[in-house]
Image (tube, rainbow, N blue to C red; front, side, top):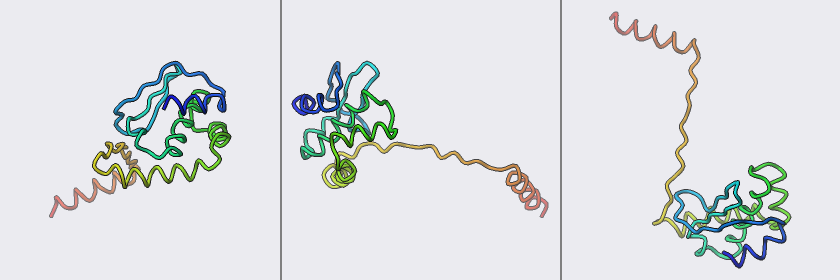
Length: 131
């Protein structure tokens, strides 16, 4: 990972502070506002071109801490076919790392209910109780 970081660091034009390899639950990498980079240990098992994408992705986050158009323009500068690599990473995750499946991100589904729906439900409950 360090070797690939040194290759892409001048391309992106950033400085990083510390690099850690961890067992991250649901991410391939992350970075902090202190310019620290973290990578999942499974990155070493990926084909080099896919690991390169993850490394570039995190280096670009040191400039743009979001996924804005400017962020993706930085990624595209270093890896023009980044979209293809994202799809390939997803495919490899499913095939190779089935037994090591990372915990899926749980998103709470917020269900908005209108006042009309609430009134309708209460009326329906009252009707069912009266029979």
